[in-house]
Amino acid sequence: MKPFDYVRPATIAEAVTAAAQPGATYLAAGTNLLDLMKGGVSRPDRLVDVTRLKGLDRIEHLADGSVRIGALVRNADLAHDMAFAKAYPAVAEALLSGASAQLRNAATVGGNLLQRTRCAYFYDPASRCNRREAGSGCDAHGGENRLHAVLGWSEGCIATHPSDFCVPLVALDAIVEIEGRSGRRELPLDELHRLPGAAPERETALEPGDLIVALRLPAVARDFAGHARYLKVRERTSYAFAVVSAAAALRIENGKISDARLALGGVAAKPWRARAAEAALKSVTPDAASFRAAAQAALADAKPSGDNAFKIELARRIVVRALTLAAAGTPARIPALPASPFASGALHA
Image 1 (tube, rainbow, N blue to C red):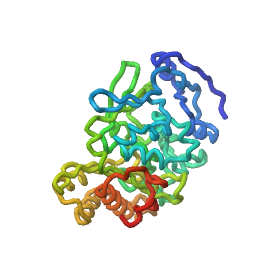
Image 2: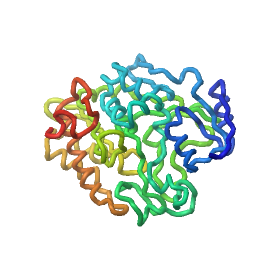
Image 3: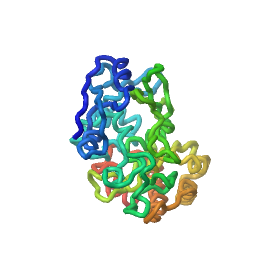
Image 4: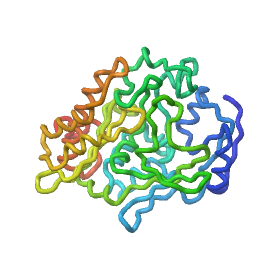
């Protein structure tokens, strides 16, 4: 491992100043970063430890009905917060379907948003990867790419974003609070992650020194609590990243869908908000035909990036299944196998 400096700032302002220096990166739980450092994928000159910063480990249920989640809140603590899980069940289900219990106990909300792709070529310093080294090429093209992107990819990169947590957050219009050199600003989570385009090395909209301090879900997101699900297909039911996933949330009034939210995971370099599908679901009866039409709209622009054409049809079916589960109603308790098609009652829903 490359030698590095280690600093532990006492305030957010000190952290931003320290992390704005070239070669610096933030350290929270390190569940992703330390693996990358051990493998020689990430080689920072300085680690800025933010784990002792005050006020970033709180879940605040605000008077206007929204919720503010500090960046250092642990994934497990958020998923098991009863008030949060009741108001945002799809988010809790997504959190509990990610990684192992041990990792969820350590991993933080802010770190989850910023985890790096799990593309094998990104993780292999001997391979060409434009994300790791700009302009070097992409060995995933023509390589082992059955799990790679089918939406929003470019010749420069076909990797996918691995987070489960981010998928329902994007569907529910989550906002990210960022502290930077110019002060505090807010950004829709849907705008945080970038598609690769011609610059795959720019993975997010963050600037040097920018620190995510909190995440907010608006009060209106609570209106979907009665019909919201997260569904994830993975090659192993436990501890695996999604091949494809979907978060579906509906408001149903008088037998019709009055509002719909839908996002996909495992299909692009960012959580993919399916706005065309949402529009197709407005004012229709929540039935199989409507859900199939929405699935078609959600994947209308999809195309294989390699040996992964199957993911397009799989994603359509997962959209239909997720919408079907959401329409049936949020279960009183999160299933024993969160987000799995093999959870009780989900396989034939």
